[in-house]
Structure formats: C-alpha cells, structure tokens
Image 1 (tube, one colour):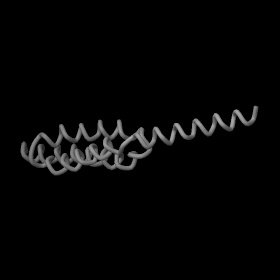
Image 2 (image 1 turned 135 degrees about the vertical axis):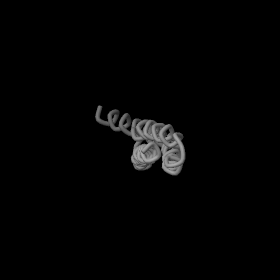
Image 3 (image 1 turned 60 degrees about the horizontal axis):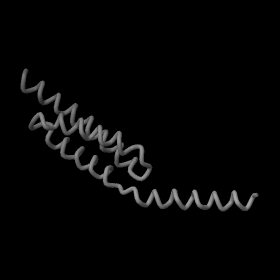
Image 4 (image 1 turned 90 degrees about the vertical axis):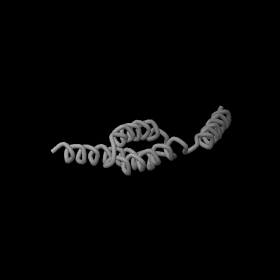
Length: 95
C-alpha cells in the first residue's frame, strides 16, 4: 500500500511540474508592458487611465500564477501610479 502511495505522489508531482512548465510568463510580461506604457501615456492623454486599468486587471489575473506574481505586482503598482499621475495632470489642466 505504501508503495502505491509513493508512486501516486510521484505522478502528481511530475504532472504539476509539467503543468508549471506549460504556463508561460506571457500574461505577466504583458501586464508589465501595459503598465509601463500606461505610466508613460498618463500625463499626455486619457489613454493612461484606460491602460492603467488594463494593467491592473492583467496584473490581478497574472498574480495567481506563481511564475508571474512579481511582474504582476509591479504591473499593478504601475497601473495605479498611471491612474494617479493621469488624475493629477487632468486636474492641473482643468484648474
């Protein structure tokens, strides 16, 4: 009985490793790139707000994967910063 459990554990571990290899860091990289573009575009136009929200959304989706968690957190911070900078410049232009 104990040997069957060992084989089952080994098979589950191998399956998890294979699944982890298949998960690419594409979503984390995409959220990071959108966050950088949002921060650059935020003082110029309203696109910074839209891209900031997109970066936050992609970051939330990517933070669930351990391989992309760090990039996703950075992207969410950049998206939030883009929203703050965009709001500041929008208020500055109105005033």
